[in-house]
Length: 330
Length: 309
Image (cartoon, each protein chain N blue to C red):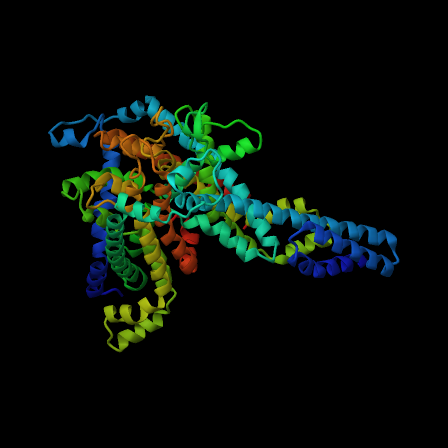
C-alpha cells in the first residue's frame, strides 16, 4: 500500500518535471536535489531506494521517448526542408559536393522560372477547372443518390445498395482498361470530359453521405411532407445544411484528388491544353542534354505542395473525418 | 406501402448515378472478365472484325512473362516489407505520442504532415536526395544522403542512378513508401490508443507489470482492431503501388540503365493499354483483384481469430 502511494506521488510530480525537460542535465540535477531532501524526510531506507530507482528509470524512459520522437520528426520533416532549401539555391550552389544547409543567396527567381518553364499557370488552371466542375457535379449526384437511399422507398433498395458497396472491393485499375476503350470510343480523348465524367460517381461518398442523412430523424421528413414541402425543397433546406460537414469533406477530398491525379490523365489527356498539374511536373525540367535544373524542379514541387499544406493546416478536421473511415490516401 | 408514384421518383433521383455506374463500373467489370478469357484479345483487332477463342491463354502467357513475374515480385516484396515496417514504426510512434503531455500536439502535427502530399512531387524530392550527379567514382554532387553516409565514414552508394542495383533501388522505395504510409497509420492507431480505457493501465501498474509486458499484453490486444485495419488497407494500397515509383524514377519505372526494373502490377496493366494488349491487361487486373481479395480475407480471418473486440 505504501509503495502505491509513493508511486502516485511520483506520478503527480512527473508532469512538472517533464515540462522543462529539454536538457537531460537539468533534470538530473533536479533529481539529485530531490533525492537529498527526500532522504531526510523518509525513514525507511529500503523503500526509498526502490522508489528512487523507479523515478530515475521513469525519467530516463521519458528522455528516451522524446529523443526518439525528435529523431523521427527530423526524418519526417527532412524532405520538406530539403525541398525548400534546394528550391532557393542557384544551380551552382546546388551542385556543390558538400551541400549548404541554407542557401547563401535566396533565389526566389527559381519560383518564377519554374512557373514559366513548366507552364504551371496553365496546368494550374486546367487542374482547377477539372477539380471544380467534377466536384460540383459529383456533389449533386452524391446528394441525390444518398437521399434516395436514405429517405425514399423503392423495390430492391437494399440489394442495390449492397451491390454498390460490393464494387468498392474492386481495384480501380480493373475499370481503367475498359474505360480507356470507352472514352476513346466516345471520342473523348484529349478533352476535359474524359477527365471528369468517368469519376463522377463515388460509391464511398454516397455511403458516407447516406450514413449522415440516416442520422437525421425521419420525423422531420414526415412533418415536412404533411406541410406539403417538396422533396427537393426539404433536401435543400434541411438535409444539406445538416450534412454540411460531410459535404465539405467530400469537396476537399475531391479537389485533392484532382490535384494529385496522375495515372488517368496521363492515359487520356496528356496534351498541352488539358494536362493536369502532376503530369506536367515530372519531366518539365530536363533540358535537351538530359540535365535537370534541380533548384527549379524543386521550386515547382514546392509550388504543387504548398496548397496541400494550406488545406491540411486549415481544414484538417474535415480531411480526417473522411479519410479515417476510408483508408484512402489523398 | 410503397406506392408506384414514389418508386418512379426514387429512380429519378438515382438515375444519374446509375447510368454512370453502368457505363463506367458495371460494364468494365463484365468486360474485363470477357477480355481476360478471350485468347489474345485486343480491342483494335475486335473492331477490325477479328474473333477470339475462349480460353485461359492470357493468364498462362502473362504468368510466363518475365516482365509480369518481375512486377509481381517487386510489388509483393514492397508490400511484405513496407506494411509490417510502417505498422510497427507507427505503433511505436503512436504509443510514444500517447504517453507524453507537453508538445504532444506539436509532434502530432509534424507526424501528420506527410499525409496530404502529392506522391509524385515528394517522390521527386526523394530522388533529389538520393541522386548522384556524375558517376559513383567521379561525382560532382553525391546527394545529401550520401553526404550523410560519408560524414559517418561510409562509402557513397549509387542509389538510383545508372550503376545502382535492384537492392539499392528497393531500399529507396521502402524508405519513401514507409515515410509516406506513416501518417495515416499513426492517425488511426493514436485514435485507438486515446479511446483505450485507462483503468487497464492502472490495474497493470498496481500489479507491477513491466512496460514491455503492458505493451504486449494490454496495448496491442486492445488496439488489434485498429492494427488489423491499417494492415489490411496497407496491403490493399501496397499491391496497387505505382505512382510513388513514378515519383522517384519517372515513367521509366527504373534507372535509365534498366528501364522497367521496378515496374509493379499496376504499371504492367497500364503498359499493356497503349500496346493494345487489353486481354493481358485484363488478366493481370483480375490477378490483382484476386490477390487483394485473398489478402483481405486472410487478414479478416486472422483478425477474427486474434483480434480482441
